[in-house]
Length: 387
Image (tube, rainbow, N blue to C red; front, side, top):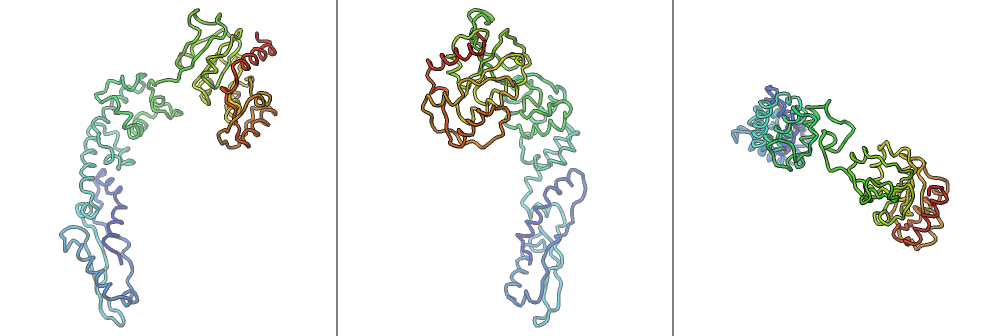
């Protein structure tokens, strides 16, 4: 037989529909509990005393006894051996007030109505959004400020400002602290004004953001914009507009190795943050015509980065990422790596990659001595006729 606790659980499943009925001004109640359990003589015979206790429990929590809650309708049934017994025939929730007392949702419902009224008064267009997200009207607390954000973006869908600069009367961390609900609202309000392929909030909603920095060293000082500026950093958007009359681009995975690269004619070195951040370079048009060189760690990840860089710049040549270099220095334990189809690697590179991955081996760039590196790099560039 159903219990008061199970009645409450069934009622809680209606919560979203109850909220939606309030939005639509439709009557959701009275509503009948649809699973109260079938009672057989066998069930009662097992323990007549326990059965009567269950009936008494249902009655004690019913509206007739408490003046709120569910209405319990009992009927008499004739059973073999035990005669007439009372059984529950219907359990009905007659009003939203009864429902809220059963579920303990009074305060939440009051919050929903207050926020719904505010939203519809301020931005009635959000009525359809509310119907999809009614629970958020309860979970999210500061709707006055959130609606300020919505109104601003409706009027200025492409601000091109940092979040801190937005002329909205909210504290500077408000949008980042409430990003999830604001993102959902803006996607509903201005779907044709957002950058659909971007996930980062600032990029998606046409805001400025702290861009990655590309650091450039002019290994040939003649290429520097001014004689005293041989090591500069540019934001990614600035770097995209920049142009250097070099022939070669040298990318190093490690910052210190980047800083200690030797003089190389017609060459600039670039560092985009190390590791897989080489992805920042992929859409820079002026780099497409340059010859790329990459020096990374001799480990599985180093070759994965090399493969990644070659997907952007297929002519990339690896420097000191071979068996001879590996044999010259003591390697250590690498980071576990799953096997990947690195289609941009040569046959010898792929063989070394698999060896490193399967044996979890790593030779970091820093372990290669400066004298060895300088000699190898200079000889390498001479062999490739780039000096």
